[in-house]
Image (cartoon, rainbow, N blue to C red):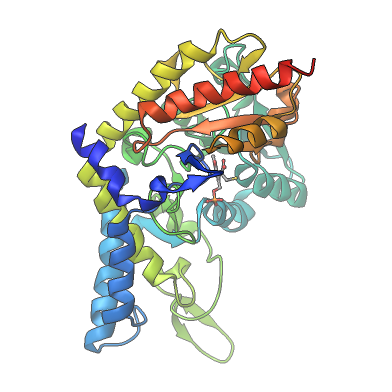
Length: 410
Ligand code: C6P
């Protein structure tokens, strides 16, 4: 754990002030901070080895390609994919999910088919399926929540039927902080020969993920939420499905041969990586995974759980507070969403900001969930391993001070 505490030095931003108060960065679910070591790897590559990948046979080109492919290998190890050829680099989880919907989804979904998602999905795992369903005259069904904020598995068993062709579920909610039983849902999906898509944007980097154990057919996540650069993302897919999947974009590097009239496709994964990729970003993503590995995902998980275990009991009894999602800390990721009765969430977040506490406020790109909860917004604090008990205290204090301040006007 000492290693974790010292490692805050890797994130100089954590030493800055906001409104003359020390920064308390609790918006990690939106984007995590990037360590100096990752920035250095990208800077060094730009300064000493910048070259396009998979094109040239010269020394620089070979170095760039080797580093780019090493990142693919690191991703494969991180999620225990069977092969690095199962890993496609994208610009983020959003692009990964769109890619499945508009390639394989577009190919297999027919009129009358059903796509099943959950009510707690991020818009990135709703809208592509909505659009696909509309285009194909298929229907989109939602697995609902239990009263305790967890996904209703019994409802999943009812909603997933032989008509279901695709099931798409988030591994961890960006609002409720709940971890979904995707392994079990995957089993249900496969009993009905449906394809299981997992949105891992809030899971990877917070607890161990094993795509083979989950039996996920596809698994999507973003680099910027795991200490990597923006504009990097991953789509893992089972080879047998990637083979059936048409290309998403057309152009350079995704082809085998081109004639005046036709083209054939490159091997997977190049088939899905048209054009010059974000190679510096991907190399940075590799460095971010090495950084994660040095700290240890399990240590990160323990640290985040410790913080949530500390915060939840201290805030749940504050008068007027609503805490969304499961009540038990053990069922939480580092994400805690709250509202304070009679105070607009945006006012809460503004008051927090005055105290240097940076949280996210709004619908968190999960409007159907907000509607379901009967609200328009929450205030969301999200912890990562570099947050401290002092940060947790600052959050608790910010909640109490905000309540006291607004109470004076009641
Ligand atoms: N959620 C949040 O503050 P991108 O934007 O492509 O990197 O990730 C999209 C995405 C997909 N699924 C889930 C569960 C997510 O949480 C996100 C991103 C951020 O909650 C930004 S809206």
